[in-house]
Image 1 (cartoon, rainbow, N blue to C red):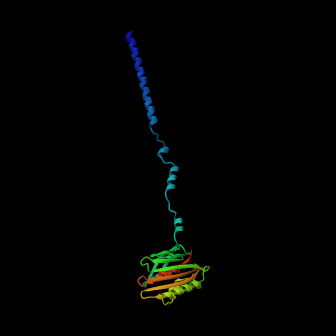
Image 2: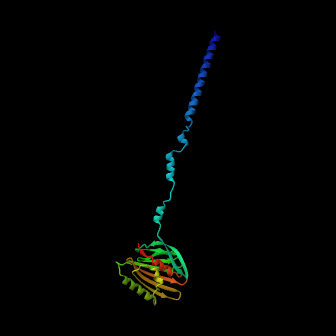
Image 3: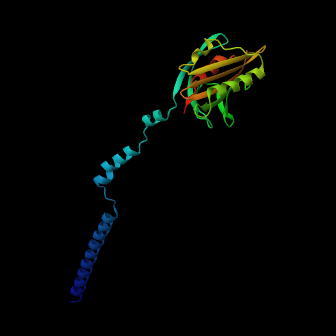
Length: 225
């Protein structure tokens, strides 16, 4: 009787242990499935919207904007020390006065004082062109011409520039010029009226630099802003 009782108890314990083991295994498998990251197609491949965003973030060059902001340029021909030269000038605007000018490389435009600018050679600051402008409504051409004559007569005995030297000035209404020659230096004064703007130009040059033709060519490009 006791043997049967022990056998039944043993069978019950075995059954309980078996059921418990199965339940534990299923629980672990379930936990493992919950913890494992899902490999969905959306996670493995970039979305179309993501690709579009990346394309939009790619920097592009706005060539039209760059061209619009570029300063006007002009090819200028001149003679220096007997040699024909050509260079690309770039537009510069006066800070104080109402004009703009095509500036050759090798020169710097700056304000000397209110109403007077200096276009100076970078190689020699004693070679320069002083620029003074006013409008025909503010003063008369004759008044500016008289002022220039008085200044040049104070410098020395004057002569006029040749027709060939003044040929760079196109479509001017009035023009007068004065030259004072020294041994190795010279001072040139030019007054001209164009498009309602009266310009008074004073050039200081020397034989070594010989930039008179270049400065006259730049002076001929002076116009209203």
